Image (cartoon, rainbow over all chains, first blue to last red; front, top):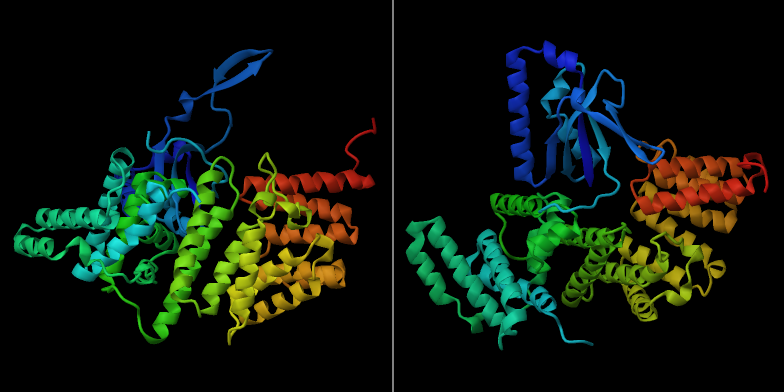
Length: 123
Length: 415
């Protein structure tokens, strides 16, 4: 079963972390990625640039309109995600609990099952 | 019948060659890699240069060479051993026994997760390449390769040997094997847009492997039951979806589109399996499937028999999904209220509360009972809870249909 484990980040919380804490989070992700690769459960992981760099695209009267993002006014923004293929929901939750972000208030880790997928994995 | 393709031939021969190598060397992990490389070489060469006169001998020679190369590169100090290995394996050395079952016992090792068991089974016993297995499960090849390699490491760590485990362990292991074959079949049966082709192949692959197990254990009634269940389910395949991929429920399927040959074979096997001394879950599910395919129309389904079979199944293999299915049968026999009362016993079950199948069955029974508003709400909730797009579309269309019949929920002024 495929799950998207998404990482929701409050930039203020991130800024308030010590260098050691930030380094620990980074190392935690590196270790997590290695483990997922070895077990054959990782499909892909991607991290996103700061939400201040986002633009919102809409089409009005047939013309594209590009405005400054992010679209959602929120305290937490999507920072990145893991796409995993694992045994069941319980395993996905177990994997998510290994992500260092889960140790910090204000860094959210969400698990949702994938419903449809298509594309080139090995392009 | 058309001539077998390279793929068909490889799928048939790969487990035989792997069996021969493992018998000789006992190192499942290395042998399996070597056979996979031989299969890849054949996939590249045979279509262009023609199938060799002795394809099994060809595969065995190539796989043996790869195995030796592996030993050389992995452990230079074992060079002498490798040379011996090369000398010992000659093409005519392949025993005639079918090693499929022995390999299945190894691939379905209980220390592995179901995902690893299915992947390894398809590669080592099914003769599929890693890329094919990856495509079938919609994951990148690298992901699948890592999963297979981890599975083989685990088997080695567990100290497993090639052979049939004895005593009670044998029965346990056969149950795991059947479950893995069932999972492969279900993976292929689950309609999923865009990927249907590969998934159909998985259903066929599961049937092929189950036939091979049945050939070796013709008197095991659960093996016979599982094969019957697969054939009877597969027989309905063409009628199960519309041209646009929408789901058609059993009651609304065009029965003339069922594959009669598969229905007949499946029914015969289901009957044969019931003649055995004990009843198992696959036999009962096959008997239920046969009762459905026996009915000339949905209205003439023998529901009392379906209900009785579910009752026995519930007793020998208690499971909330079985109870859910029995509620549908009970509603047909004694009316929707009886079905709803049985369903209410499941609502307290943490495994089922909020589950889309519970919600969709309840919606169906509420609709039958005339509670259109309740049915509509449950169809909607079920549509939100499912992870299948085809099922979601179906449930939404049901909700809309019920809504259109319910004057309290007219969606706008009549035109």
